[in-house]
Image 1 (cartoon, rainbow, N blue to C red):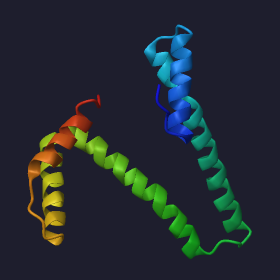
Image 2 (image 1 turned 180 degrees about the vertical axis):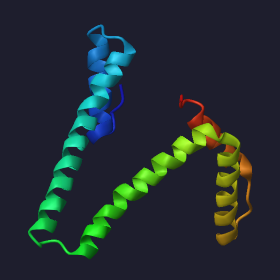
Image 3 (image 1 turned 90 degrees about the vertical axis):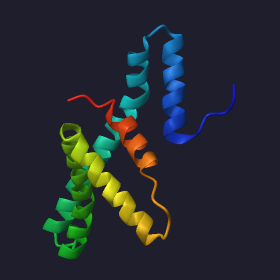
Image 4 (image 1 turned 180 degrees about the horizontal axis):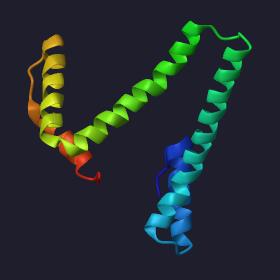
Length: 130
């Protein structure tokens, strides 16, 4: 067997394989491999948010820094909302993604081929359920 990628991917793959060998089904093994990372990131996110609020309350964080920290969850939320909207309005979502891809191709002076964008979106969105 070849070497696995390190860090999160390697840990999840090793846990998955170890739990599968113990006789657990694929879904349970997948959860065992990914849930620790999700919980760890959730705790770190909560602690970071509490730390930012604390720093703001004790006047150790300027409003510019606060808004800079606030920008990240806003952008992530916009991405989640875009995908959620795209699940319900696929044709409009595909058309918008095609326009954005064509715009970037034009800026980069490259020819635009819609097939990779459409294939990527179809592959990504077909597994999402409402």
